[in-house]
Image (tube, rainbow over all chains, first blue to last red):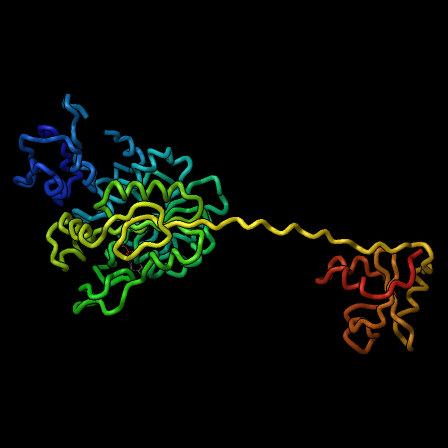
Length: 66
Length: 344
Ligand SMILES: Cc1ncc(C[n+]2csc(CCOP(=O)(O)OP(=O)(O)O)c2C)c(N)n1
Ligand code: SF4
């Protein structure tokens, strides 16, 4: 599990299908050098986590916890 | 966000084997989420799968699971439900498995209406074997085996499974997540055979050939093709997502008639001993008598008691009470004949 600004990303489970990148309504997630990176601006809508078929991304709550 | 559904998945086997973006992962995850909400777990639930990419789902569930031969998950599930009616039984499989090779089982299992829930990952293709056209492939779709477009029209599962009440048929997609979860929940709670037709993406072997680059583009395509309909329905059109269900109205059964056996007075009947009875064996023009439960009947008119020459099913002049108990017919056959006496 690799922490990003607001999400935790599991690089082993992730298959880089880019669903999270595409469903994010504010488009803060990107794939860079084969890693999911996050820019500022997450609105904590949980869309990426809900759509991820591989349980590879989790949105942390405000306190930065799971 | 509640992530306790993860305990229903065998995470040590993750990442699972499905392609990047494949909808089967979403089916697995959402079914696990709803099961968790309903309190279904390894103690009270069994998952059954057939063969195919979708057939691997039961293997990732932290439950007792059965991986059956191709097309047979419904049969196995019904058998489990029959012997262990206390268990929740669900089938997780693919459209090819359930509707093609298992099509006959689908018809007859749904007709018998066992209390099982079927989640059909309907990716409109045979995924595992390389993307051949399957029973639900829409007409005109280019696949490995139909490079100029599928020639035949698809099987309309929604029509077939909603022909005769009782039924529960839901159509949803992996894109319409809230609707998807509602369908799962209602199907799991439905008493009787419930079928959830989950339109899902096989991005690698179907989507790419159709020109989609990512799973999300296929999701958008689902959104164009289908729309959600609310409320109680008894049929769904081919472009509608929703739940079609019906129950049979209980018809009160006619009260069973009580059978009245004729009670014949024993007094005044001629008494017979066994030796006397034996003389009435049908030989030399004598009548044929036989005893049953202490009464003697004249069976001369019966074709089954015609002396030595004819069909010798039974011998005359005997007490046949024991024989009648093991005979394929009942005692009513004897009551038709005239009563002539009683045994001493
Ligand atoms: C008796 C038998 N016939 C054929 C096959 C080959 N086969 C394996 S999976 C499959 C298709 C499965 O399609 P579907 O149920 O749609 O699952 P998907 O892979 O699309 O998820 C076929 C034909 C087999 N394994 N066994
Ligand atoms: S072949 Fe298709 S159905 Fe099978 S795992 Fe890949 S995307 Fe999913």
